[in-house]
Image (tube, rainbow, N blue to C red; front, side):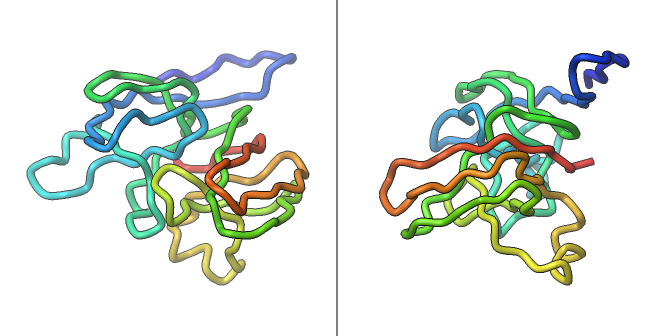
Length: 151
């Protein structure tokens, strides 16, 4: 775990190291990561791309590309420059302050969540830090900056 010392020019953050065991490909910069939470596979370091269905294992957003069976850093708390939005089949606007949660597409995030649903997400989410109108109606996905809250 890397905990940034107080620095007046950079936002504080906490980063953890994970091992990508996701057989479907690398955990790309901006993708959400989750620890493996299945039986004998739980070891506290093995991670896969996050999904809405398995939000309890969400540990942060990748700050670098992590190849299959490779190790890399994810931000578990604090500011990140890239958060990849999910392809939802339409044009949307992500407004600064919107709550982003793991989406249906592995590793990506979506902005539709009510305040009442936050407890079901175990209060693990990303707050969008930029306002961006994005057309994500095709396979091209868009990025926003954000503040990760996964601890």
